[in-house]
Length: 376
Image (tube, rainbow, N blue to C red; front, side, top):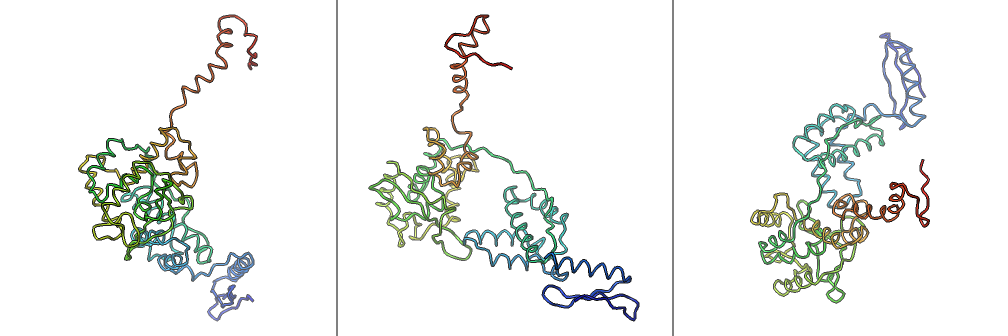
C-alpha cells in the first residue's frame, strides 16, 4: 500500500513497500513530486523493474566475489577469473559502489589497462566485468549496466608463421634429453602443452599407432598439478601416431621411467611437469637456437597444422586432428596456409570459355559445340 502524509515541517512524505514487503519512505517539498515518485515505484513493481535504491551501495568487489562463487567454471577457468579480477580490476574498481560506476569510469579503466596489457587480455578481462554487471542488473542491484558504448583496443591480427623444419630440429637438438620426445610429440601430433604434459602411458596405443587425448594437466594456484578435462568437448580426439613419434616415445620410455601415476613425461624428481618450470627450460632453448623470441611451445602445434595442410589434408581433417570446436576456427587461424587457387580458377574459366571467347574476339562465330552466351 502506498500513501502520502503531510509532515509538520511542511514536507510531503511518500510511503510504500518494496516487492520484498519492506517499508520505504522519501520526503519531497511538493506533493506532486511525492505522487510522481509513488507512481514510478508502483509501475516498476508491476513491470518487474523495481530496484532497491540502497542495493547499489554494494561494492563491485563484494558482488563480484559472490558472482564468482556461483559460476559453473572448470577449475582452470575459475583460477583465471580470480587472478584477472584480483590483478586488473579490483585495484581500480573493487571499492566502487555498483550504483556509482559510470561508463566514463569504465572507459578510463580500459584505457589504463590497454597501456599495460595486450588487447586480447584487455578484452578478456572486460568480458568478466560485463558479465558481473549484467548479473547485478539481473539481481536488481542496479537498474542498468554502465558497460555501454565502451571502446576496446583493436586487436592486431597476426598471421601464424609456422616454424621451419630446420628450426624444429634445432629446438629438438638443444632440448635436454628428458624432454626431446615431448617436442617430437607436439610437432608430430599438434597436441597442446597441457595435453602433452598430461599424457599417460595407457593413452598411447603402440599397436594401433594412435594416441587418445581426453585429459590435460592443469596447474592451479597453491595446488599441485592435476588432470582435468581438455580445453573443449571437441578437444577429445584420437590422433594417428607417425613412426617418428612412436620411435621417440619408445626411446624415451626406455631411458626415463614412467611416473608413479603413469605420466609419460615427468621431471627429474619423477613428478608431473609444471608449466612454469618448463617455460624456463623452453625459453633457454629458444635463446640458444636463435629462434624468434615469441616462439612458444604452441608454435609446434602450428607446425603440425602446416604439415597437414601442405600435404593436402582437408579443413575438416585438420580441425579434427587439432581438436578445434569448428571448421571456422581452423580457417580463421590457418586459411592463408592453404595453397592458392588462383591458377585453378584461371584454368577453369579458360577451359569453358576459351574457345568461344577466342572465336568472338576474332570476328568469327561460336563453335557449334559451344553454347551461346546471353550477354546483358
